[in-house]
Amino acid sequence: MMKKLSKVLEVLLHSARCRSRCSDPHCHLMKKLFSHSKACTVRSSGGCRHCKKAWLILIMHARNCKESDCVVPRCRDLKQHAKSLAQKPAVV
Image (cartoon, rainbow, N blue to C red; front, side, top):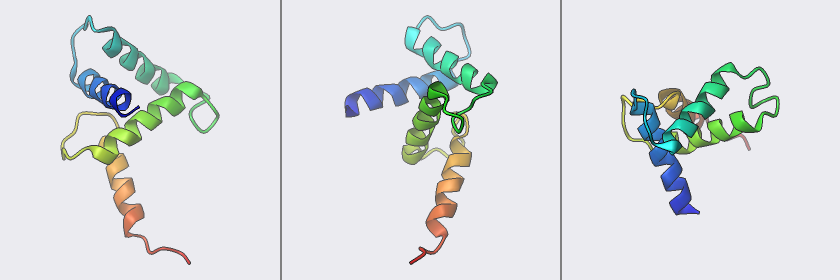
């Protein structure tokens, strides 16, 4: 499972950096997933499984990303959100 997740995160990073018409089918699928997410009217909150998958991949990436100027979409936002949640006092 970890090997598969690692591969998905690797493809995410590649596709975020890739600007050419890449011949890698995984890159193409990742770009297609994020193109869908931009145009989807149902969205993750509405139950779109493709959007949920895209958000899960982004969240997993952001949790492990150490780059301050990361090229992955929404990475910086997700890291800032996680940081603000961690700074809030726990409600008991």
